[in-house]
Amino acid sequence: MFYKSIALAAGLAVTAFSSAFAADLAPMPVKAKPIIDVPFFLVNDNRLTYAYQFTATSPGFADKTAKQVYAFTHFDVWAYGTNFINLELLKSDHRDPASPCIGTVGVPNACAGAMEFYGLIRSTFGWNQIFDTHAFTMGPLQNVSFVVGADGETENQFLAPNKKDVVAGLQFAFNLPYKGFFNVNPLYYQEWNHNTFVTPGFVPAGFTGIPDGNTHFKGTWAVEMNYYMDLGFLPENLQYFAISGRAGFYGPKGSGAYGSYTLPDSNKTKMEINSEPIRLTMDTSKLIWGPKYSHFLDVWVAYRYWENKFGLDDKNTNNGVCFFNAGTAAATNNKSCTEKSLYAGVTVKF
Image 1: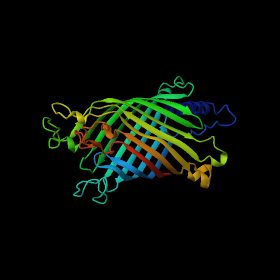
Image 2: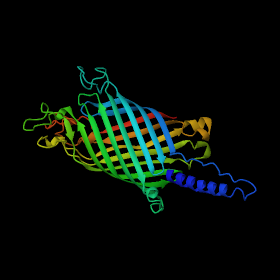
Image 3: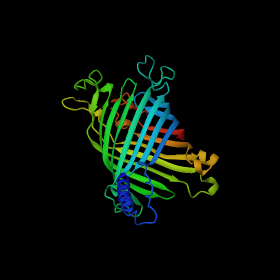
């Protein structure tokens, strides 16, 4: 779009020069029209969210912990693609304690709750835009794009996670009814992290552990999906509602050991499913102030499902994070490695 503006300006300049050259032959001078500049961002959307997750989990620490979530979200569309950024600050209750903590893990009111920061960015580059064609639009398929992104996370637990990952792949964007969309992204996924419990003092005899706790996982596959659709089939006096959701599937990524370092098989990861299958949103600002203020104030409720959280194997009875009395006949799932929770919040556009 920027290059088209330059071409338009050049054409108008030639026209103005020709008109000036012929001014003595024309009864009136010809004046060039002002150039209309096209904005760099065709869409620039920024939002703040406060949300409350009722029964989150913290693997190895709590099977249920409420979390308050404060988030900033940015989405833009430019000439060749899109950018999405989500920054979250998550505050757990006392069942998921911050470190240091001299209380009893899992006991309410023992210690202050942990604080976690999570950031995510995804950028797309549309093939229709790059190649100046409509060849990648057919039927419900709206576009095919390159997609790249990264995540970063840290939390003040004893575990001391410090996640960094990169993704790259394709996005297939489909149209849904009522101005909706459905995106599917097959990706390559590479993660690095930190885990205090893989240092030598915590691993069983016969394994070296990782001296600094910094894990280097193997590259794996991933599929990320998201959708949105207004409930336009409702009567006109009820058209304030929309549904949306997302899901991420991440393949096994090994144990995190690398080089000559060794970890037990119980540390090997399994496929992780991190999802919010459905979110029901009420466009409160449209309801109160009319269509001009649509989605300036949203109130929503959602369901969260996260299986094998962080890749931890929720079925491996030798896994001391997901099971009490791991490796024995009395091993019992502590229900901290799969999260099932209601989630509600308020989002303000600015």
